[in-house]
Image (cartoon, rainbow, N blue to C red; front, side, top):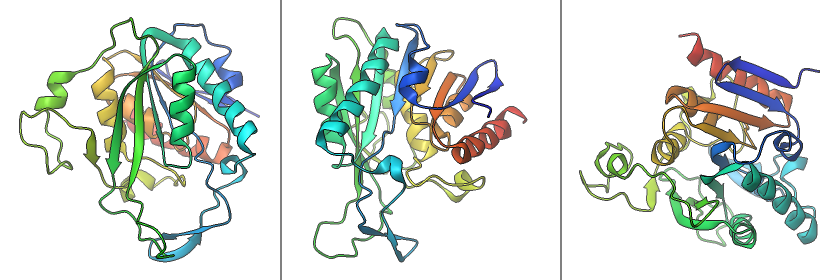
Length: 262
């Protein structure tokens, strides 16, 4: 079975385990990483999707294997991420309360320096059907750098002066804050298929514009349906993605080719 997909000389997809793939790359070779690891919330509960009650189970890959196994999993992929990042490189990790605290703990344990935690507010979040908790309407995105003593890149001027339509609270030429109001992926972003934890293109475009330059290499070790790669292609960055499941590789390839064939 094919395991490597070369879209062009700037975009490569791998099907396989991210730790195994990352071991093939040289240390200090990647400028930026966006990681959307399993949230470990497939616990036979239920949620609301399109107005209907549906299971939260997304697959075996999203199930907790127990505290020790989860800890070892996060340590293994984050250790490889740190090894391949350039000294000035940064990593973004998204998650809910099911996983983000383990991510933060592991980042600090491995010597990363946390720069910000972003609250991605979802104005169109689904309701809470159990009526026993507050309605979850945000995810946390941690931004950290590999080495505290190396200067990282941040496009402050663009983040301050850019036009960000979905952040209605943001006044022109004011510093961008750490609460980002961005809706869920648009229907057009799912026309080739959807991933259960797909991120909106607007979120990834902002992350990439904030922390990378044109020509930089961006890595996504949990590529899913390829949103990070789509944003990278659109913005003139190089991209390396890793995904375990063939059906999501196929979706990513179609999305990438739509851009490169224009």
